Image (cartoon, one colour):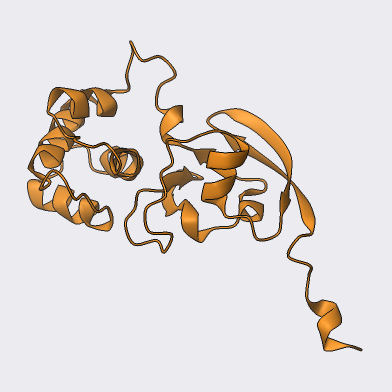
Length: 166
């Protein structure tokens, strides 16, 4: 048997079915298509930002089966049969923001906004598990999300405020 015969063509297509923000999505995707690129370029969910493409900055964080993951480190085919939530899934009405989004708006927890979607998606399950977190716990939970603008003070205050609303 030729050892090369086991190597898949990277351009081969795979059918996937996934639930994204409550909607079933069926698509054919290339083997090596990153989940972040699938969300942004194939589905137009541009709230999932791509900063480093190495899983370091956290800007591409989404929820996969309720857990925060870096979508730049996963392939789209790995989403098959799974449930995903992007920042767009928090609220579909700009007049009726999710309490976490409202707290970030109210407490000035965003500046340029590039890191904000990833932070929101990291903080949602954190607050669901820790309804009354300390500042230290919040800062620890934020450690996987890099922000170059705020110095984190307003972000921490935003998470504290959101904890009171959830």
